[in-house]
Image (cartoon, rainbow, N blue to C red):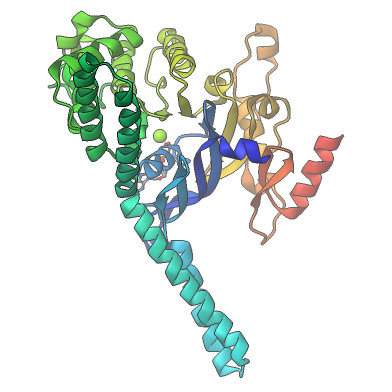
Length: 404
Ligand SMILES: Nc1ncnc2c1ncn2[C@@H]1O[C@H](COP(=O)(O)OP(=O)(O)O)[C@@H](O)[C@H]1O
Ligand SMILES: [Mg+2]
């Protein structure tokens, strides 16, 4: 990737793992997953139910404490797991013991000690970033707001000044309560379960702002109405309860609740899976509009490729906790390489009845589709921007395949 593209990265997920349970019972829901989402793009994360998509989303927004790996958001590390560092310390300690026993040199032993000290320092840094990223963010925000208003107040007419000062106070109050992760908002699969039935639409939409310390009733009202307009509902809906709405309308309320926070990133976790087929397109269109008008970046999670096909700029395919393929949307559909991606593609119904009749469903069987080997497959770049999880031998075969 060129350097200018790197500047554009809003979310960087780096070797992220999320394991549940311990010992023999450990469930590797997300295992060493890496991808980047660039500003303004829609990144589709696809894979069958249970492959770890939701867990990936929830770990990014810190609902879980990551086992290993990092998440960087807007250049700041917001998630940092430590298991990989502890594993390295354990390995180095074992190596050191071997060296002492078998007469290793002083230099070799010192190298182990140095590595252990280095890992301990990494653990301290990781814990600090994971727990304190919000404090640093608040300080930065406060400074940014004060500087912005200093500049504005310099040239302000006297009658404007009071208004500006009021705005500044509101922004500072929000900054004092703000968390970096509120700039990432999630939209959930099930609009029924995710909306509190005892709250009115107005309360649901304004809740996040109130938590941020906003008390100005007029401002809250304006925000609620603006959001209802944005998502295609009407102002009269504000004082109704979720059960009075259809599934599609409830999902619009869910979207309004997220968008009101002016997030930089939306994680949409199967937002249309629970909806009637007839209204799915409407919700997709709404998300597309938001992306264009508000410059929103979207991590779009889905279990089948047909949904993300037209909507995503790039797609990552997950299988059992691993990312197995990642590339541009067009490239993925034209040149799918990993056998699991091919099987997902073969599952998409075709619009033409004649070709649909002859569509052959390919099933993925990891035991048959890969040669038996002890080598742990890795995500490798087969051609620019096209990554596949494979062994060295498969990598060479894929390279040959794409050059033909
Ligand atoms: N809180 C949890 N505790 C234990 N296992 C979990 C938990 N959440 C998810 N899992 C397991 O992790 C795997 C991935 O789940 P999930 O991320 O929900 O998949 P997806 O969203 O792709 O359907 C599943 O096997 C699931 O049972
Ligand atoms: Mg899920």
